[in-house]
Image 1 (cartoon, rainbow, N blue to C red):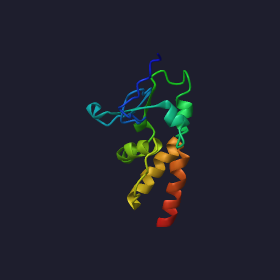
Image 2 (cartoon, rainbow, N blue to C red; image 1 turned 120 degrees about the vertical axis):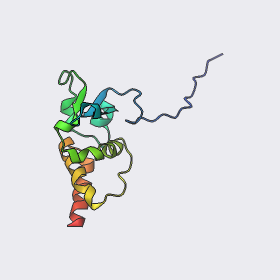
Image 3 (spheres, one colour; image 1 turned 90 degrees about the vertical axis):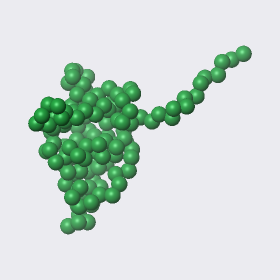
Length: 131
């Protein structure tokens, strides 16, 4: 008699919102250290996913950063912080949703700095529509 494998009943998807199997950390330090925000992410999604952010390709090379962490507040202006989770959802495969006029520049800035073509090019199209 053969033993059958158990089928997972938790239906877990890979997402930054579930820290299981995460192997990299993104942080945002505000003026007050107690306000530090942390996101646990998966390198294979940020670098190798269909909506990859190519900045991390260099940042995550073996030995490049021993800390396995990227401090986003050193890369992006403060106005971009509130869009970070929206961008992470997008990189992980979620729809971007409705983009309002005031959303375009911060989203475009994040896409540019993180080198996320899948976000950058649509933001350029939206920007051209508004102009």
